[in-house]
Length: 154
Image (cartoon, rainbow, N blue to C red; front, side):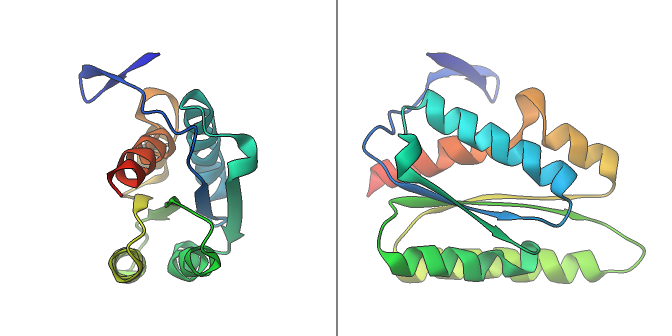
């Protein structure tokens, strides 16, 4: 199976032997739910067995690093996918949340040697978030491909 990715065709990676954990934020669920659906569909297309996928829900993007750490400490996963949505508001709160989430995810990934695909979108408004969570621009889909690709590097 082939799919368009960054304006070129690539083969979907084979994830049939991988165990993948997904940590998804419930804040902005109208955005993160389609991202999760996209990630799960792509994992299925890449032959990751349903029994080898675990989804953990956390309240918001700030809590994603702790969710990732919990899955990593179980020792059961080859890679993780972090999914969240941070939309700019009237203050700079979004910047602090995005910085904390991204730094936490990267730190945990490097410290434990487990790839974590970064599917936390940061947008200026809801319209941008909807675009990045659906169709061909679904960042959940892209994060799933990234997770499989990085897990195979190990």
